[in-house]
Length: 117
Image (cartoon, rainbow, N blue to C red; front, top):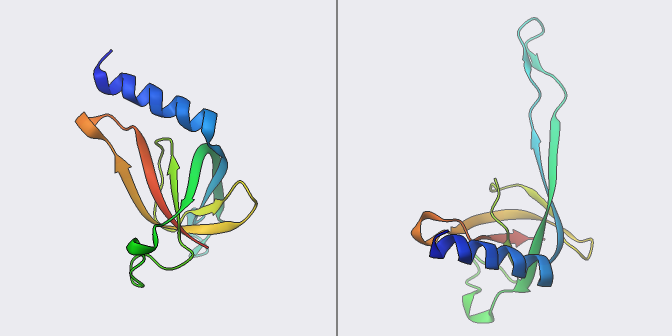
């Protein structure tokens, strides 16, 4: 096991211990039907991850990329994408506006999501 594998295990353990359950969902268009020329019903994919939520430092709020009210959400690595829906531990909802993986040495430790409510 490498140093970064150890760090990934530590990060996962800390998120599990100190984080809360966060649900991420994505709506994918339904399959295209060539006979009717339309898409079928959309498919909603959702999964739950351990996450740690915090407010952005006021010095980082620039009014363009980071707005007042945006939240920083650190989660275990996963297939996150911009515009995914997020249900926070307190029941509030938001939309992912940025996905920034933290992967030193090529090993994913965690992902930072910028969530807008």
